[in-house]
Amino acid sequence: MFSSLFLALGAVSLAQAAQFNVTVGGGPLRYDPQFVNANPGDTIIFTFKQSNHTASQSTLTQPCVKAPNGFDSGYMPVSASNTDGPFPAAQFTVQDTNPVWVYCKQANHCQQGMVFAINPGTQFAAFQAAAMGNTTASSSSPVSTTATATTPTGVVTATATITGGGQTVTTTYGSFPGSAAPTSGTSTDHVVIVGGSTLTYTPSNITAQIGDTVTFQFMQKNHTATQSTFADPCRALTLTSTSGQVGFDSGFMAVASNATTFPTYTVQINDTAPVWVYCKQSGHCGQGMVFSVNAVESGANNFAAFKALAIQLNGTSSSTTSTGAQATQTQSSGVVKMNDRGTNVLVGLVGVVAGMFLV
View 1 (cartoon, one colour):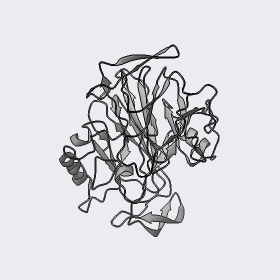
View 2 (cartoon, one colour):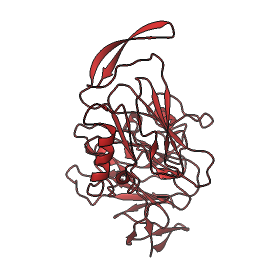
View 3 (cartoon, one colour):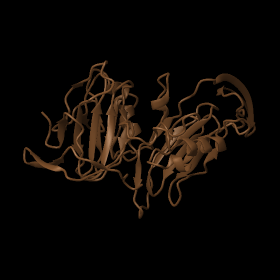
View 4 (cartoon, rainbow, N blue to C red):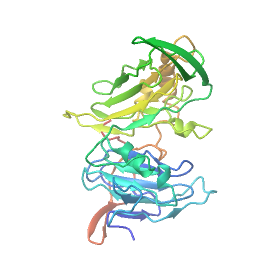
């Protein structure tokens, strides 16, 4: 049985206020995006792909155990031969700004990191780690949201000798052809400002050592830091990879104009390969809102070329089209008011008025 806030739909329903589309399964065992930041009244549409998954509410401290009275979509089987839809979907309406923790209760999917969250703050990484048995999440001990940049092909193992602080260290690392060798034995956190008064990452192109971290600090409006590729700047690596690579994705980070605190997302650098990043908010990548780490500036695939290609391709690529893999937000009108066990829920198959929240 569904709770009064969770409806199984034969076709995707559209709700009044902002709507977030979340793809469940369909290849990798994951929700895509893995978390969203939403306001009361917003809706989450879970669209289920292959093969048989759920969207079930849990808790921060017990990620893979259904929460008492928590919502549960039930199992949503989808045939492997069904690649074009229609796909089953379920809708959840956000009631407040408190975190909502979700997992797939199929077999050991949760233990493989198949979890999702609404308004997780800085605790999503801890929630997923607890699900996978790597640590115990604690609601009183928030941590920064972290990820690791996916390594492209072409990286080889190399050795370098580093001198610093009166010590000489020999290190083995993943080296990308044309990239610089490590020069320091200590790690640095590179802070990158996302958005604010301009559609930019500041700085937009950096050089980072192995072991360094890149912390994206999100300013006003609503942006992402999503890993892509040089060849396809405005589409997520997860969507374009032919080898099953899963790139990092901060998810949308909505920040009010009067905000005084700002969310962050941190990525670990494990080799010298270039890392390509874009904002997947509608139209932003096409206006040059891209970022890179360790771009080989002496070669053809440098940052300026990456930005130029993003501007050139965005208008004709599918990067700005809602595919369900991105947390798209829409505004609906003409909805039908339905009642489920005394709770009013706005549901309707209606025309969509384009308009991203806080674009």
